Length: 191
Image 1 (cartoon, rainbow, N blue to C red):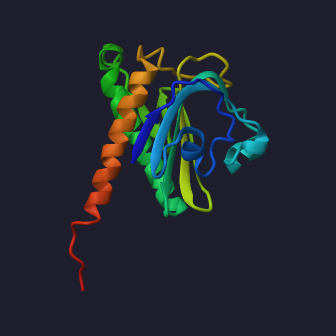
Image 2: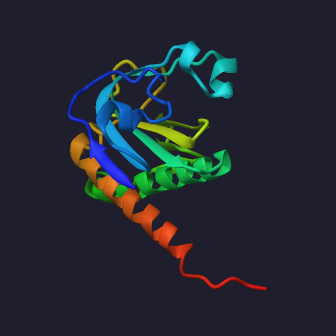
Image 3: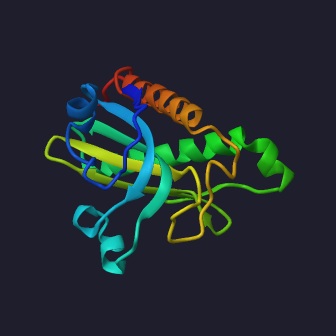
């Protein structure tokens, strides 16, 4: 899995969740994870989550850390499993990275499905979907709490640097993906 932090800041509006985004826009060919900072404002025309569409839910924030993961030749079930694995990786990483702050308050980050919370404060948004050639995941965390339609938690609250968080998480995910792929190649078939 290739990884790239994109230094240019731009808005995530849902249109980036498309086949070959990392390759055509940023030169990252193949299974990949890319990350960048920017606002989030997803119009209903680009929203792929049916639950959010039915609820007419606003998904927005003034500054978020975005990830797009693309894996080829997999089904949507695999994409959702990878989405939840990444959410678990994020939760574990942040709990450790912000341990002095969280332990001082005896607080624990929780993952519910693909979302991460601290009590009733929502840190992340995420969706997994399938394109004709790949499964794609958008995962984002609030960098600040400005412009969010619900009560949120942010990386600023946790006193964490977004670029370091992004690079660390992409490295952890790439290693995990490689080890999962490698594990499929070291087992003998059974009769």
